[in-house]
Image 1: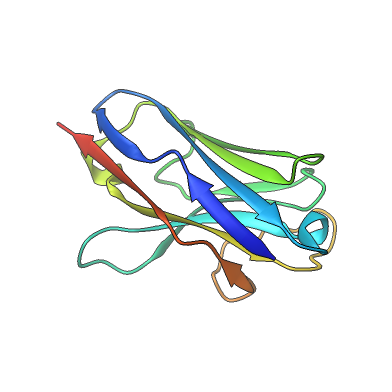
Image 2: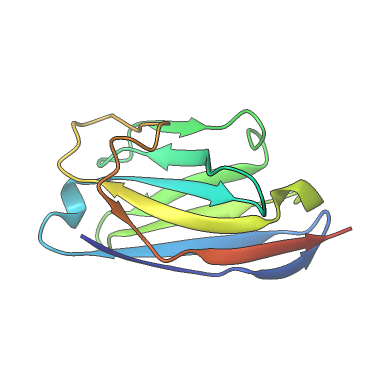
Length: 126
């Protein structure tokens, strides 16, 4: 599975942005997809995940109610709609794929994810 993330940029606090991640490869449709982020001098952390059939989602507490993950099953693309952005959301955002995941599974740990995209940077100014 190959992953290509896009959509990062500079936005003011309170603003919105949508990240996209295109998944390709023979088993891309069988993958749960997740978003993780890493801020400067901090460890990578989970943001959101969605199951292969879009029936299950999970969110980090810090983004619940502000971020929404979705996926286009036909186009094998996962989206992260980010609203009410805060300066602490500033990070490099990575999408990841858990290949051949069971239906409804959307892992919050990085361990099950087999493939990682290159990252897209988000900066939220105060």
